[in-house]
Image (cartoon, rainbow, N blue to C red; front, side, top):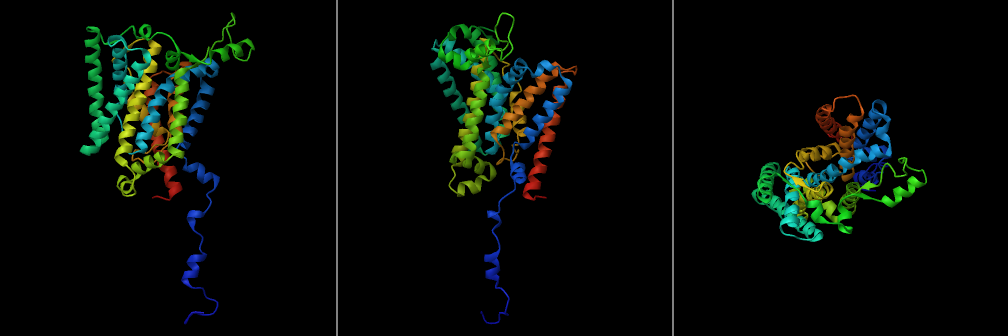
Amino acid sequence: MARGEQPGSSSPTADVAAAPDERLKEASFVTKLMRRPELGAAAGLVLVTLFFMSTADPSMFTLAGIMNILAPSSQLGILAIAAALLMIGGEFDLSIGSMVAFSGLIFGCFLLLAGLPLLPAILATFATACVLGGINGQIVIRTRLPSFIVTLAFLFILRGLSLVGLKWATGGSTQMRGIGEQAGEGIVREMFSGNALEGLFAWLAAKDIVAKFPNGVPTVTGIPVSIVWFVLFTAFATWILLSTKAGNWIFAAGGDANAARNSGVPVDRVKTSLFMLTACAATLVAILTVLDAGSTDARRGFQKEFEGIIAAVIGGCLLTGGYGSAIGAFFGAIIFGMVSIGLTYTRFDSDWFQVFLGAMLLLAVLFNNFIRKKVTGER
């Protein structure tokens, strides 16, 4: 026994050793659930679904109605997931909507003016997007200007270049036609336009598993390719965030860039790569829409930059960075599609959609802040 220590008493060292390490404490299922960024978006999706189930025409929830909802959701969702990863990394990209229009112009020029085959034209368009995304990122990093300002400038630059470029390429029109015919047919075209699993849906219709017309053709001939890309991109982004070193770097760069640099995280490279990712996501949406429509115009992607960011915020991304998920953005995009298309199945004026956007954004931020403070004990 140490000198001066009373019998039966314990030393401070022993007390510290006996105290359990709270970092090793097993969190309850409810606590783990509340820590998930996508909780608010999942709850919002359930509420929106219940609302339309009670107010909309039942045809909204048929297979055809669901595909009508998911098709626009998928295009927005591809942008929202890329925006979510960039927001987790601590930056914004307000140029992604304009990038959709500009990439459509570049893609059309490679096909119609340069005469490239479809696959080289797609690859060249993505390469151009990578360069522009890298320029965005490097300007933000080297000037230390807020990404909000830099990409806002690029929003107008790219939109203006789309207008001027289309007029130059077409001789005065802001729409470029003939892209679909020039693209031709083949496996590459099928990867970026049309429907997937058409044979499966024909078989399901023959077995009376899905609805069909009197002539035997299924009412839904397949899954739009954009939905397939949406799901694959969500899975890829989720894997990156949760299962790779790059995902840890993204969270670290957005949480505290200086601390991340001191820990060896290549913050500048991570952020530049994320800007390139958002540009490529916008290019993917551009190629999907251009090949489906067979043309492009200067208004493609109009205001999608704001809708993408709102979907990411609804999905749990913090405006301050370092927190969020791709799955949350996935749910947020589906909520957008459900409301924008779902209102046409009700007697409500479709202009209520604008009110919904603002209300959902505000409620999502309030909900996410409330949950975070409850879990972390912040005041």
